[in-house]
Image 1 (tube, rainbow, N blue to C red):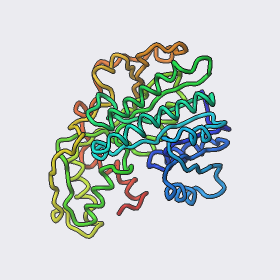
Image 2: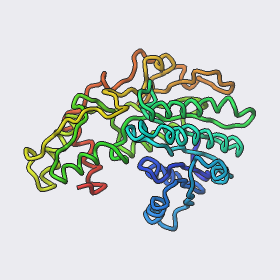
Image 3: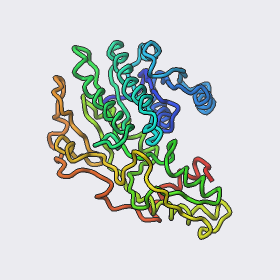
Image 4: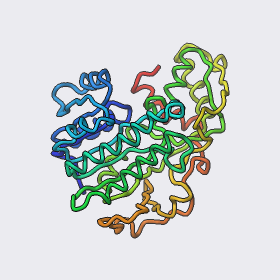
Length: 342
């Protein structure tokens, strides 16, 4: 099983919520170096202060839209984790040109640099919104996935593996609902809910980083790994958070209103991690699903999944039993105390 020990690793979007946690998880594997690639000077500086000068980390300022910069960043790298993306659903609906430039063209730039440098492994980090997408963000992430999987057919005799990881909402990530609700509770409300019947997958950020590393270990060529995740209902989440965290903010729960504001552009009521069409290529493992490549990949070997159970139904948040208020609080309690959001 492959290890990151003594490997030279590149993480694009390495200062984001998922990317920075992934960098820390990779450092625990004793790599030779981790290159953190990000387009935010302030975020790179903050991460450098947090990790300290002794960590084997190099901080690279740049954008994945810039092919020349990427070629320098990938030089002598063994493993690439691609987390850089534009991810805000509503903003992407109003700025689709920019979303394509980053999520599609940027991914293609990085693939080209990885092929030219003949790295060992490339893992793209995707989203549930790529499964049967209804938004600009989801559509561009689906294209990103397809580019990464198809890169296995471009590699010729190069010994490179390309694959993806797909998961739902990461607890506490930038732009996610938990920090938003906490901020609104701190301000005394109202807590704004788009649709209380909406359901979403939820994943603690540490588990997200672990899944990415597990995918790297399991990957042969062309798979999309999907973690099994609990589900919450937006209305239940709002009620649970108001009840639990209002007192810490100096308010009584009954004093904070929960206001329904309607779905934003691009949002859907329920999320999908494995669609009805994808399930025919999917196999069920103990703690995850794996979607096998739909295209012919010469070096692909599905022996790892020959005994795995075929998936009989789509994997959607609508079909799962949602967490109770108590279970939701248990899930987010560690995150709230850890990040001092209250």
